[in-house]
Image (cartoon, rainbow, N blue to C red; front, side, top):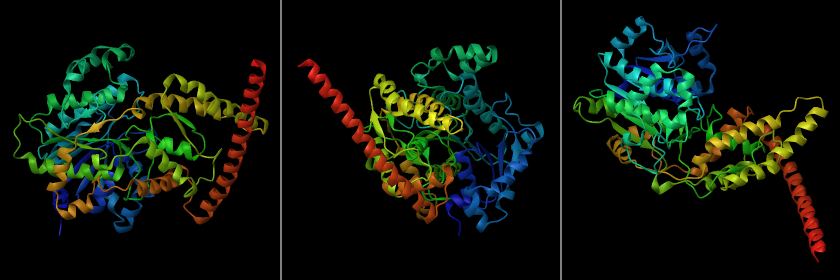
Amino acid sequence: MDTDIQRCFRSKTVFLTGATGFLGKVVIEKLLRTTEVKRIYVLIRPKRGVEIQERIITWSKDAVFELLLKSKPEALQRVWPIAGDCLDCDLGISEKDRKLLASEVQIVIHGAATVRFNEPLHVALAINTRATRLMVQLAREMRQLESFVHVSTAFSNCIIYDIKESFYPEHLNCSSDKVLAMTELMSEELLDNMESALLGSYPNTYTYTKALAEDVILKEAGGLPLCIFRPAVIIAAHKEPISGWIDNMYGPMAILFGVARGVLRIATIDPTAEASLVPVDYCANMTLACAWRTTEDGSGKRSSESPTIYQLAPSDENRLTHGEFIQHALDGRFNCPLTKMIWYPFLHCITTQWLYPLVAFFYHTLPAYFFDLALWLSGRKPRLVKVYQKIHKTLGILGPFACKSWHFDTRNTDQLRQLMSVEDRRMYYFDMVSLNWKEYFLHALRGMRQFLGNEPPTPESIAQGMKLIKRLKLLHHILQFFLCCVAAFVVLSLVKLVL
């Protein structure tokens, strides 16, 4: 017998953007595995020399779909690609496909976005803001539309630290309609030159353009059965489809991987600040729950009402600090060590921004020159200095989010869970209160090792990693002893000079 959410999607046609992204893949997998959805149209950007249908076929080899294809070998045949590009001024969708979507689609999940914090403003505006307006306009043409879920981010209003499930248009220097009008009149270069004036207090183009996208919805989505889902920082899967599954090197998982490799040793992180992290499977489940609830609410909602906003972030009862996050990462050193480490994994945190370049020189840059010299002498290409240049640039971008704490109101989300049946809560789980962080990070580190490090989860590989880390630990302590002796010698020499 179907649950409420399964009934919502049974024999329905879904249109999903962002299908090739981290969250998009997990949404598709969960939809196909747990519901009898009729068809999923996915917006796919064409690549030269590669048919868009071929990109769907390659998913059969992706680990994320392994569990699905064991139980439903033909499941991916229900996924139909639609050629398009959110960078295009009309989404790049042909007139024929536009009519097809307008006549068949009942549920829209708009998850496409560029998540690069340093994306040029004109690109971020096109993908994150203008494409949202175009999706809203397309949704108005859909004659059977029952639900539209816009996937935003919990940090779309990060210039304040107590964020309610509400709209905040007052924080924008210029409204979305005016900014989008400017994009039609100005060159890309001129628009990018206006970045600091337009962004105001927003730390980067990502959060700013996502805030503008929400303003688009507030102003232009009246009368549509629409909701906004704001997840916090999305990280590796907890339980499904594979415990620890991850396919990207963004944000916190990049830090975990850098530490595990022995590359990242110093970072501008406040250990007492709260980390706003949510597993990708929780986000996928909540996306589907939001679609169900919006379908239920749609017929009785007045056009004058603002869309409902749902936020997903660590709960007040189960918070996680950056210090705890780092400790969990370090605890994994002897549970699932990598076989390719350049040094013993450790991480020191500093919060003084001006001090970081000096400390990073001794922790990162100077050792990198010695490492690259060794590579050059052995006839290999030096690479570590360039790696650290990228790491320092990334840490500079992430800095504002690693040294501050945010509180996210989740009353609408809590109410959504209460309205779900017991079976739906079990199947489409997203309760952050019951998440065991220690257990989670153990699985996440194993997943990082397998899916980012490309190291097999075999006893032999783990044993190889254990052997390496013990050797590196010994070398690490020998180096520490040597440096302490040098420091003591320098101090004694200075004391003798003074006396």
